[in-house]
Length: 132
Image (cartoon, rainbow, N blue to C red; front, side):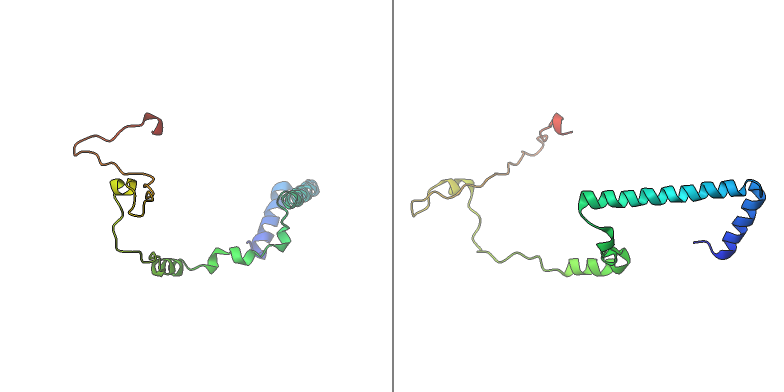
């Protein structure tokens, strides 16, 4: 933001370039531009409030300040977070043939939703022209 010295220098340059005769005219134009920008900002604020239902004066902007977040802490917490799944039984998952056969109690086991098919060595992968 410019200081008082810079503003004074700009004012002196404007008086010299524009001239004292046209200065009131340009001052009036600048005043009209500032009023129009304020009116547009107020209209945008009202439109935002109508469409979203959120008043910008009620928003706590401090919680959106990115300076309060330390990326090192976020990464450290994410790396140290315990994401290990709960222990399951050590039995291996049933094969497709075992899943399709009935269990000893007479109930059919639930078949897996999808079986991964392996390609033979050297066999090219299928090509889908619609997916590319």
